[in-house]
Length: 344
Image 1: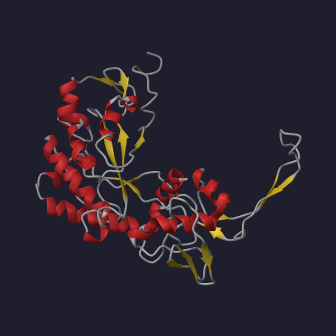
Image 2 (image 1 turned 180 degrees about the vertical axis):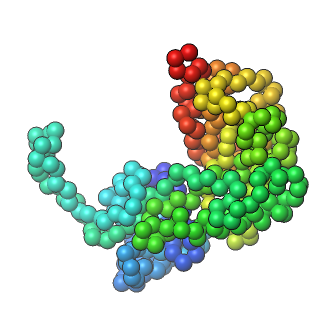
């Protein structure tokens, strides 16, 4: 049950960012009585308000107190029931209407169930809950709405405060931008708070074709700038964040672990020594992961020393630097690309 509550909290994290609406938590034994009224729900002596109008009428609302998060998850999970928890666990998008009945099709494979209707207890059947957040990444290398200079130019300023301000603009625009809204204008449905930004690329070859997407050739400067940018995007550099309790956006950095060139990026096999990988190419990511400002990273294309970058052992190595689970996105088939182009 503890692991399930953690998963629900993560699935709802995009919506928990918002100051005007809220989401959920619970205690460990799950044995406390939960008391509902028309406007509130109380558990363990803590009272949460309930949404009074709109599509989510009745939904318990989180009060933004970190100490109440565990109790709120108990309340929220009680409200959505097993039906809602399965919906979230399957990462289904869009709003969902809770049910307490299901009818199997007449041609269902199990003859004992075909055409039958099953029911279960759900006092909130008919209520609508938000779907699971979308974690597909949006490109924001040079900004979300506001167009900022290329990262190579920003990096040459050596101005951390400037980069932090840029990150704050990007994160704020993502949080309240139209891309974060569903068709119904709700931040709770189809929430997508992930951004590909704060790139950690270190490329020494000016013929790369995308050398402008990295802050510098120097891994230390790139690390400082990308970490500072990510702190601004997430809002972790703000006092109100309370050491990461809420965040404006979820940073997906790229490209890990050895993106040296743009040519033959799908099928090329690029080579690097162990020292070159650990102390140069991937070192620019260490600061952002250690400070918990990166929540995800996208791998490089192609292969390194004939090993697909999407399957690199360095992935597990860098994940250990973070206090939280880190997601990985394999860029453009990086986990399956062969070392040579098709037909050669």
